[in-house]
Image 1 (cartoon, rainbow, N blue to C red):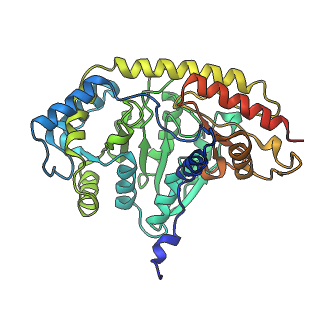
Image 2: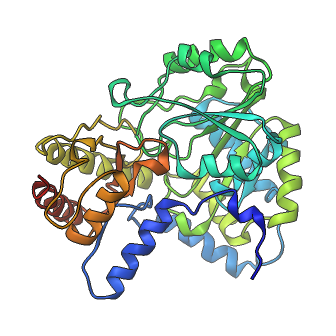
Image 3: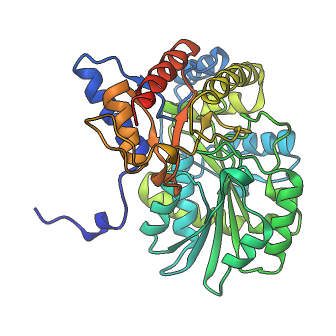
Length: 396
């Protein structure tokens, strides 16, 4: 069967691939502990679920406007003002079927053939693939554990060329947990001021899961705001992964472009989710903060465990719910049956021998690292890391 060459431009997400492999082992009766997927293990808060029930009963069951119901777009504006002190109007907001679609809309709206998209490493697996789909060119800017997986102004300046079109990053970062401070963003902003052709996609989906203080958005700098496309959603902060609701806040021209693209792909997102999202965005955040408190406890436990594992270099994540340690100490080692040559080998070794799923760092642009989630119960986390320690100790 002859399929489109389009499929050759990009790869399957490694995060989903590892989850799939874990499910296959589980189906064989093997007890696999999942430390791979980026999904809160909490249920959606009750008041949000009740809003969805009411929406069903009130017959919100018809097609929705492509960019979202007016009250939802206003709710996004209310949230941005309340939490980020950013002023937007409904015309600046487009809601989508998840933040992934929001990112896809923005990249397809902004990037032409061979235009460069600057992405600091490590980055979420989908960033590079969306750029490839748009026929753009990924320009990686390398960070390291020594810098807390953050880049500086000099590195950004060195990466810019006449073909640079977009800077794409996340803070808090998936997979590293890096969080840019206001001062660090200001230093990057100084570079962007010298290069007005560059647009900035700021993925803020982990905004609420912050262990070091107040979230800072690069859109706060008034002279850059019209060049910033904020991407956010409800999956992480409200435990609403399956509800599929993401959004952008951007200059009206960019919002209209994203709306045009979305109109040909999916049209408006789920009507019931939208009505529940209004409540999520404008009411009680206590369930979110309680969830963050639990993530904080888990983070402390994981870091306590990992520091006792030989050769693992693990910066403390400042946000999100992952650790992203450098595990290259184990490359070249073997247990008599398996030889570890790279991060993919190590992830597969842990899956097949310890029965713990993770994601190799190559997928995130950092081949020395492996991502482990702590979005699982404390019991599962402790058992998972117990197994990992035993498996790693066998590598000589």
